[in-house]
Image (cartoon, rainbow, N blue to C red; front, side, top):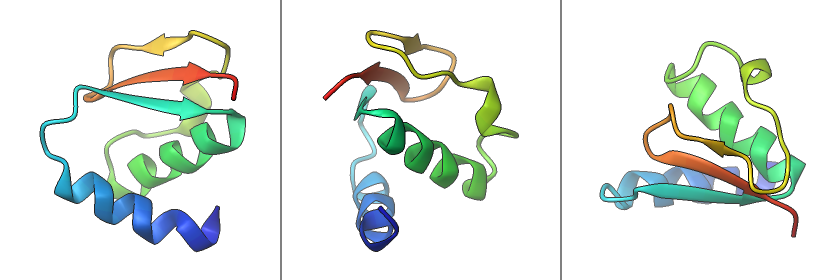
Length: 68
């Protein structure tokens, strides 16, 4: 995921109208949360758990977790 992270960051910058992010798997969740933490958008990754169909609607865009 480290090799892809810069592409994820760039895509997020380009897509300003996103309403929901879907992460497929726990590694994707942790990577996305890491991006948010580095941007200062969340204080801690620990507050966000992974589970199938778990929705974190307090984030903007909302974050939906799913198994892949």
